Length: 386
Image (cartoon, rainbow, N blue to C red; front, side, top):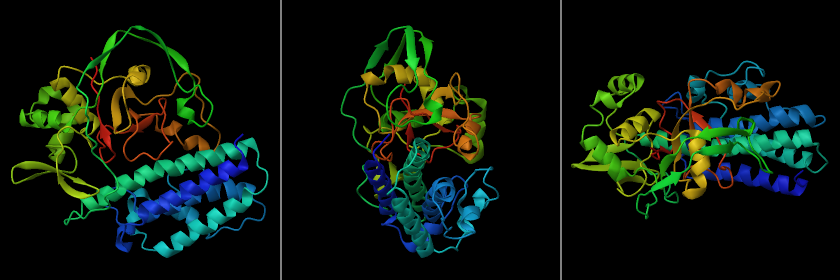
């Protein structure tokens, strides 16, 4: 078990970081929801608080009093076991509770947690508490992505802050790393925290393959655009081709042509594209089409995990060719906690690595992120294999 002191420190550091992400916002920014996949910052603040109240304090702290009877309805996300909740698309309609009350809610629950952790807790409670902490870390990345989307869809394209270097330069030359055929072990096998979808360590057989030592760059992607990548149906899955036609997709999200030059919206505002940096905010469909155009392919998640000791990773969540499925022996936990990962194992693609928006000490080589193939508001890119 982790010492109570270290657990409390990790909790408080996580709670404070979430609020620090919101400090640059104007009060009006907290409520905006321009897309169903984007949640207002105020909702993130409340939801990550509700998780601790619902799964820790309400169940395990003697004589705990709910901060507000309606907040479970307002801030539950998708936990059917918990009960009714606000429809996801209506989160932007929640002008009440106000931002100040949501911060009061956060501070109330944080103080109750500190008091709760002043005593002894069981291993079972520690496990749920760690899920809550890492759940909030996940929402920190979602919060940054949602803030960028909110501001990127503001006609004025206002800057958020300058401290995030979204497009670090890739200095090394592109090379192919040879990985020999053989049997490789996949899945979490270490001490410390992991999610249940990383468990069920198992063996896979991989054929010889090669994987790029670096991510696909903006410069490479501009070449794809200029050579008609978005107009050649031969490069696309049928669903992907329908998606770009129906949504008039002609470039990655946040890209704009200004006076003949490509620019992109960043957290620091509109900037001219850095060609050597890794391309970002692309869908699986776009990643697949680019790989086809290059005469290559995307790695499977198993190839990525076997090869990751040989390249640097972490600037982008990297699309893989793998569908999000359970590992051998996977079993959902009982009750609401079992809804955390298992029920999403359909119609989604696995991403590996991490991104410039991922909180420190949150990802690991076995981490399995997952999204639907058309989504691209997250910090997503690609690495080629062949």
